[in-house]
Amino acid sequence: MHSQARSLSSLFRAISLAIIAAMLMAVAIVPAWAQNSVPPTAVQAARMPEFASKLAHPAKRPGPRTSPALARARMHRGPLDSNDIYDNGPTNGNTDAWTINFGFITSDSFNVTQGNNTSITGMSFAAWMAPGDVLDSVEVSITSSENGGTSYFDQTVNFTQSGCVMNDYGYNICIETASFNGPTLNNGTYWLNLQNASSAAGDPIYWDENSGPSQASESTVGTIPSESFTILGSSTTSTTTSIYQAPCPRRQSGFYDLHDFDLETAASGVAVGPAGRLYGALANAGNQGAGLLYDLAQTAASWFFSSLYSFLGGTNGNSPNSVIIGPGGALYGAAESEIQCGPSGYYNCGLIYKATPGPSACAAGLCSWNETPIYQFTGDADAWGGTVSAFDSAGNLYGISYLGGGASGNGVLFELSPAQGSWTETILHSFTGGSDGAYPTSLLMGQDGNFYGTAAGGGTYGAGVVFQFVPSGGGWTENVIYAFTGGISDGSTPSGLIQGGPGIFYGIALCSSGWPYQGCIDQGNEGAGVIWSLSQSGGSWNFGQLHVYHGNECNVSNLGEYRALAIGAAGELYATEGAGYTAVCSGILDVQRDWVVVYGPLSMFSNLTSDANGSLYGSSPTCGFGNDAMVWKYSP
Image (cartoon, rainbow, N blue to C red; front, side, top):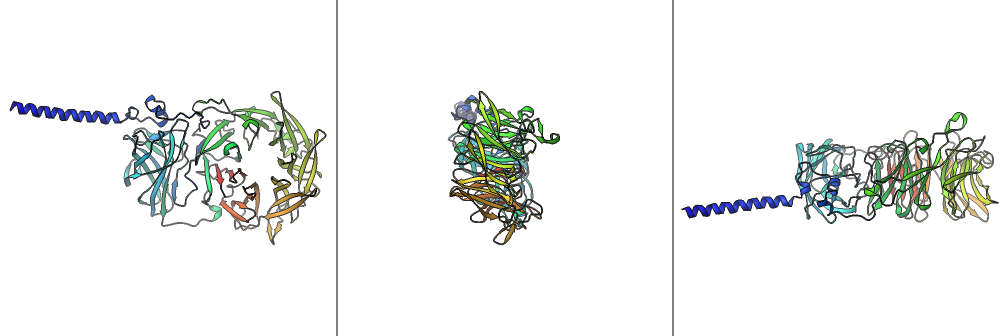
C-alpha cells in the first residue's frame, strides 16, 4: 500500500515537474523584452542588446529622420485603387511602431463614408520586423470601440508580405496585405484591432506609427499616435462626382501620392536630383513655422521623407520657394527677408540661400542640413524678391527678379559669383519696359550656353517678349527673339519657358492682357491660354501656336490657363492647366494628343517637372490626406 502511494506520489511529482518545465519553457520562448506589462515600442526594443543583435546595421542611413509633427511619408502599395474604403495609409517607416503580438493589442479608428451596405473585403498595413522574418497571420477584428464594444468581425487572417525596405534602425518595413470576407457596414466610425501576430522567427511584430488624423490606442498604454493601414471593400451604393469636385487626387492609372504633409502650405514644386531623389520647400512649415526644406528618396517601391532644414526667420530667411540643385549637391533658392524694397517699403527684398548636408556620419539620421544666406537684396537699384535659375560651368549663379532694377522697377537679370567664402552680385541687365521687355517671369541656360527667358510686359506691342542673352565683351547682350502682339495668334504675358532640344523652346501665355479674356483662336474655338513654340532655323526664329485652352477639358467656358510645362521621355510635351468661374478643375495635358491624362481640383496641378525616365512630378498645397499639402508622381 505504502509502495503504491509512493509510486503515485512519484508520478504526481513527475507530472508537476513536467508542467513546471513546460511553463518555464513557455516563458523562455517569450523574449525578455516582450514580457513587460507595458510593451517596448520598436525604437525602444532596438536599443535593447538582446534584440538589437537581430537587426541590420546599414552602412549608410537614408537621411535625417522624419519629424512626425511636420510630415508623414507615404509608402503606398501603388496607385490609389477604386476599392479603397479608407486609407490611413502614409507609412513613415522611421518614427516608431507598436507591438501586435505577445498579448498586446493595437487599435485604430477608421470611417466608412461610401454609403450603407459597404462590404469589407481586405486590408493592408505596414509592419516592422527583424530582417528575414516573415509575417504569417494576424488576428484581425473590427469593433464599435477600441478593442471592445460590438464585434462585427474577428478572425485570424493570413497575410502576403511585399515591398520590404530597411529603415534607419535596421528593421525591415514591409507592406502586409490580406483578402477576407469581412462584415457589411453602414456609414460610421469603427475600430480596427490587430493582435496575436505570428511569424516563423517568433520575434515581435510591430505596426507602423504614422501620426495621422485617426484615433489609435494600445491595450496597456492607452492613446497612441495613429497607425498606417488601408481598408479595402466595395459599396452597393455610390454617387457620381463631377471632375471639378473629384477627390484629391482623382484616382487614375499611373498616378501616385508620394507624400502627404500634415498642414496646408504653399508647396512650390520639386527638383529632381541624382538617383531620382526629390527636393522641395514648404513656405510655412518647420519647427518655427518659417519654412522647411525636405527630400524624398525612393527605395524599391517606397518613398522616404526627410526634413532637411527648418528656417529660423529673421536674417536666416523665411517662406522659401522652389529650390535648384547646385554643384556638390547643395540646394539653392530664394526666401523672404527682414528688408523691404520699393515704394513705401511695400515689397520684400528677399535673399538667396545655400543649404548643404550635415556631417556624413549622422547617428540615427537626426542631423540637419546647414543653411547660409549668400546674398541679401538691398534696395531699389537691386532685385526685389529675386529667384535663382541656373549655374554656369564656373559656378556662378544666375537669376531674375520680377521687379526692381532702378527707378523703373521693371525687373533685372543678375549674377552671383562666389569668391573666398562670399558672394558678389552683378546686375547684368535692368529691364526698361521698352522694346527689351519688362517683368521677367522665367530664365534658363540654353544648351548653347546662352540665357533664354520670358518677360511678361514690354516689347514692341507691350505684350511681353522672349529674350536671349549672349556673352559679349565680358558682359551680356540682349536679343529679343520674339515680341508678343496680344492678338489671337499668340496672346500676351509669356512665362514658363523650357527647352525641348537644340534651338527649340516652349512656353505659355495668356490670350489677353485685359479682362475679360479676349481669347486666342484654335480650330475655331476661343480660349484663355495658349502653349507656343519658338524654333530656330537659318538664323531666324519661328513662332508656332501649339494648343489653346478652349474649355472642353473641364467642361467650362473659356476661363482657364496653363501653368507649367515639362518634356516626357520621348520628347512629348506635357502641361498643367486649370479652369475656374462656375466650376474649378485642373489637369495634366498631353499636348500632342490633346488629352488630359489626370484630373483634379483647381489647386491640384500648378507646377510640373520631369525626370530622365519621363515621369512627371509636382506638388499641391491642399490635396493631400486631410486636404493638406502633398507631393505626387504621374508615370505616363
